[in-house]
Image (tube, rainbow, N blue to C red):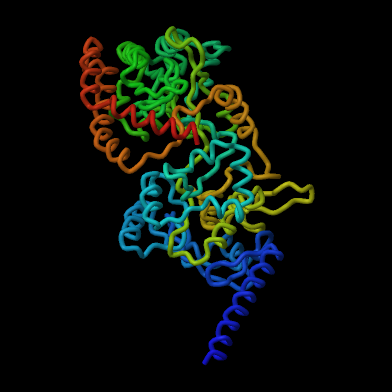
Amino acid sequence: MKLKLAYVVFSLLLFTVLVACGDDSAGEENESSTNDAVEVKKEGFPIVEEEITLSLIAPGTGLEEWSEMETLKQYSEMTNVDFHYDTPPMADFQTKLNLAFASGDIADIIFAAGSDNLTPSMEVDYGKQGTLIPLEELIDEYAPHFKALMEQNPEIRKSITTSDGHIYALPVINQHPTSAWPAGPLWYNGEWLDALNITELPKTTDDLYELLVRFRDEDPNGNGEADEIPLIDVKMESSRTWFLAAFGMKEWGIEAVGDQVRYAPISDNYLEYLTYMNTLYEENLLDPETFSQADEQKKAKGQENRLGLFPDWFSFFTTGQAEEDAINNPMFHPLVSDVSPEIVLPGNPGINRGAFAITKNNEHPEVSLRWVDYLYSREGRDFFDQGPEGFLWEMGDDGERVFLDIPEEYDSSEDYRGTLTPAYGIPVPMLVDLVENAPRSDFDLFIESETQEKVDQYAETAYPLTYLTNDEQEQINSIEVDLQSYVEQMEAKFITGVEPLSNWDQYVKTIENMNIAEYVDIYQEAYDRWASN
């Protein structure tokens, strides 16, 4: 009996030693082992020697089944990682994702959800529950490209680290020349500027007022009718950003001024903004249909050459011009005013959170992170943006990409691109930038030059991407809905004169009674955590 027991103990010890030796050997080969002993290569392709299959949920654009997209098919061959795709339509995606979380039957990977669908509070909540796994240690070992981006820009790590100190989701990292745009720009009608011999754009609110008066009174479209609309918008949704900045505000809500957080819509600066916009409205310099029209109506007026200053992503989206003609429409220059003599301009941080998460159901988290890390390299992002060679493009003899003719059944190259790659209209976790060795049009160069002159050198983040605790989020939710609704309604009333500006004090008092002090304090605490991260 003693001999048998000694034999058993010896066998167990021998097994332990063999296992330990096996682990050391794997480490020396610069490979790692997942939960079921799949070897993960830390460099190069394939990621694994034998094919594995994971499940992935993402919003679908409806242009092509993901299993048929050439980019994903080729990437599967490169990596030996295949997927079962669940891609409900974008309009249904959040509902489908919420149901999956509630049931526990959640896919291995949540892909391209973005912060609108996988919200910061969901990251915190499902991370603490263990449904989403922490990624920071995996990043250090299996995501060299993403780790390098975080080292280049420390704000990335701050912005994706939750209040419990973990990273539960990777973001989109935008380094495109337009990435700092806080919103679609405002554009001047270049033909009108030429007609009025305007050679220098307004730099102050007074200068802009004078130009808008000339747009109204001097028939710059040359049709002999007083049909010009000097300034237009749809519910101030696009131009608000640029006019708030002229009066020293970077956000229509919570913003950081230095290290102090404030609620801009009750500041004296905001009163100055409302006063200015009310003047433009009363003097018929701001379209009287601003708060009642849709974007389609705005575009129709633009194509009739009735607009002097207007918002859109590119000016030709509103005017209907060709790209080469739109180069004559200069971008709005940031303004200063008596209350804000230095240029203030909000900037987009270029980080869209919630783009990639790994769930507890995933048996191969190391593989999953290696798989997505390629998209944060320039080679990988070019591959996912434009698809493999031979469809949208081919490499010319001079090393420059040559774009190919698209199949006749597609209206545009973008429609065709959306059948080749998922990086179309959704927040794919990747590095967004210019495609290397791709030709650039005169319009592309114009946009980059205008952006460098009028946005990049001034843009600052209004308030960083912070995370709230569950308790903080509940308090914010209880205040925010009524607060935002009231501020939105009152902006329209003050600008149009339905509510006289003499009622400003009552407006401020109403907001103070909505627990605005508590609201600001919560965001101050979140800001302080972010700053010390």
